[in-house]
Every structure is written in C-alpha cells, then in structure tokens.
Image (cartoon, rainbow, N blue to C red; front, side, top):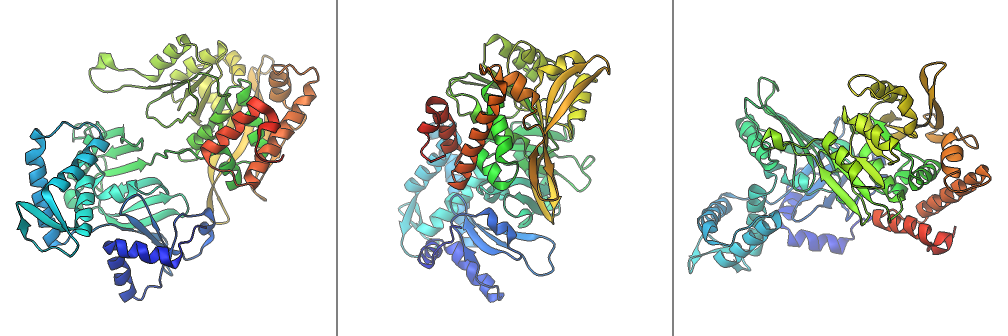
Length: 542
C-alpha cells in the first residue's frame, strides 16, 4: 500500500516546517497520529474511519480523516502559511518583481514564469540557515530556506496558479472540484469519493475570484456574460457561473481535473468497471475497425474508458481526434489532434462539424470525436458510411435512447444508416452496498434496420449483474459483430474460430491483471508487442 516508514516520515517532517507545525497542532487537539503514505491504494476505500497523510506535488500535503458522527470524510490541505512578517516580505518581493518585469526577458509559458520567479528570488534574496528577522542586507531580503520556499509557493500560486485552489490542482487523486460561495469546497476523490475540505469560499472575495479565474481560462465572466467554460493549461475543464441573479448563493465553479497519464484497460478490469471478456471483445472491435459509442451519464467514466481502449487500435494507424476541450489521449505516433475555436470574431469560429468534415479529407484510419452532442452527429455517421471507424462518447442511458436521439431532432440520421454503428457501450456510476462504483451496464450490438417493424434491431452482447457484480457474455458463440463483421474481415474461413482469438486475448488481459501490469504505457507496449510478434512477444507466460 506504499505506507511510509518511520525514518522517511521523520525526514519529511523535518524538511517541511508547515507540516511539522500542523502535526503539533492536531496533537494538542488529541488527534491520533495519522499514518503516512507515499501512494494511496484503492484498498483504503474500505477503511471505515481513515486517518492518513500523503504528499502531493511540491510543498502540499493532504490529511484525510473522518470523525465519528460526521457525514463527510474531511480533506485538510496542509500548505505553507505566511505569518505577518513573511507576508510583508512577500509583498515587498511582489513589488520588486513587478517593477523589474519590464526589464527582464519576456516569458510566455507557465514553466518560464516559474523559472523567472526562482531566478528573481536568487537575485534579490539572501538565504540564511537560521530563521530570518526582518532585516535587509546589501539591498536584499534575508530569508531562511523554509521561508523562501513558502514565499516562492505563495507567489507562484497567485501569479500563475489557482490561488486558494492551488492545493487541489497539485493533488493527483482528485477528479472534480466543487466551489460554492459561502461553503467549504467539496471534492470528488479517486479513493474516498465526496470529501469536505478546509478551504472556505468567503462571500467577500468570491466574485472577484471567479472573475480572475475566468480570465485564466480565457473566457472572462461578467454580469452580462454570467456563464463561462474553458480549459486550464493542464487540460482541466472549468465551468463558472458568476452572476448572483443566476447563481443565488453567489459565484459557483466546477473543475474537472485532467489526468496526464490515462487509466489503463487492465486497471479498469482490476477495479471491476468491466471484465476481461468485455476487454477482449473491445480489443477485437478496435483492431478490426468497428465503430463504437461509449455512452452514459455525466461523470460515469466515459472518457476514461475511451482513453483506456484506444491502444487497441494498431500502432501504425493514423488517428484524427476532434474535441471542444482536450481530453482524448492517443499514444499513436500519427495523431492529428484538433480543437474547436469559439473565441475571437465570429467568422473565425471553428466548430465540431467543420473539423469532422475536414477530417474526411485528411484520410485518417480512425476518427475520434471526444464527445458527440448535436448535429455534428450527422457527420459522424457520414464518416462511418464512408468506411471510417468512429469512437466517441455520448450522453445516453440505454441503446434505445442512443437510437432515439440520433434518429430524432436535431440530428435526424436516417434509420437505414444506423447499421454503420457496430457497438453501444453503456456505463454508469452506480451505488452498490453503500459504495459509489463505475460499471459498464451493458454492451449492445447494432444489427441494422428492419423494414418490417421500421426499427433498429440490436442484440445484447454483455450485461452487468448487480447481485454478484459480474458481467455475463450473452452473445457467446452468437455474436453478430464477432462472426459477421470481424471474422470475415480477419479472413477466417471458419468464422467460429474468432472465439479462439477472443479467448486468447481474454487470457492475456487476465494474466496482465494477475501480474499487476497497470501502467498505461506499459499496457500499450504489451498490446502492440502482441500485434507484432504474437504471444511469443509478451514478457509473461500466457
């Protein structure tokens, strides 16, 4: 579980005085000593009353604990806190920084700004081993190493960071950040689900903060433009509702954190999102150019699943992705990544429809619209009709709803076109035995249009059983997609031989899970090694 040993724990505490002070403060309140972890495991989800601390990026540490009778698990961000003396020094440093900015080399990226701040502190401060007083020396501010680290953190979080939300942006275990004026920030944690933080959104500065944050995403809000959507430099998606007339409690904000390294297919199998049978089925579908819709409600894990299965596309294929905000991650060398443009003069706008049409002319092997919402769905089906496999996410809770929405207003895809779509996967966030889980509920095969009933015929391939949390292969030895659309493309004379390949790939995925091969890029290499060299190319026994 990556629990920290006592020696490492002591070194960490001695190097971070803000952590040492926090531990001293909670000890006075007769808190039990928290357990320190380098990394968190999902097994910790089973802990009834957790009490643990883990590091994030940089100087921020997180204390997770639950007290008896509390509805929420508490999430306490431990970050450097400036006393009055340090605030004066920080303010002076900020003044000097802005005074000198016009005379320094121009900086454009966040990394360049971070480096510039560090360079400035090197030039205008003197480090001392002892705690520094408020004196100056040779026109420079005297700081201890700890004071300098604290000021550097504070300056960077204000200039290019997320201000009071910076501690959350450094935590890799977060999915969503929910900010409501007059309340403590709440988070969706990857291990502990909904947690309540120690960061309070004060009404006095909430309005100013929401305006400043909206400028960071390049979509300023105002009373005349109360709603803004945008993306932070790290790829996190932001939605801001600013006006009191719209949001009665005051400004609200939701941040959906971007994960730089995607979750692998084997990790999803290990977590029970779906089983190795579904993984094997999707592997065959994507290798042989079948079109797939990953559907479900908001925050059901659609994009996570889509990113996890993209490595099943052979490495030599050209991928063309189109998104409003960058969430699709493709490991392939030939990846044409396109984003819509909704800023500047209206004539310069570029929407999903425009980019999808352009994609048809750029000869991709696979087209991946990150999310299909409206009339661009017509172009998605045009792409499939011209032989381009498409993988996309879509908001719908069943295969019936998918068909209804695509064949109805405003998309209006002719029913006879629906057989260009091969598979509909439905994924949801479910409650089971008091736990919030993400599960693939079903996987349906689209057989095509039936003129007699004037409807689309679909077949249940896989189904989730809520009783024992398992998935059953309903179409085993009776799959329209495997037999009629994949086996024939694979050149199998006996189409039933496709199930031998299905069973082999299922076994490969099961063995990878057994060997705990969960790293996304390691999984990518396993899959592509199998394409190149077969089972002999895999470094584990099958």
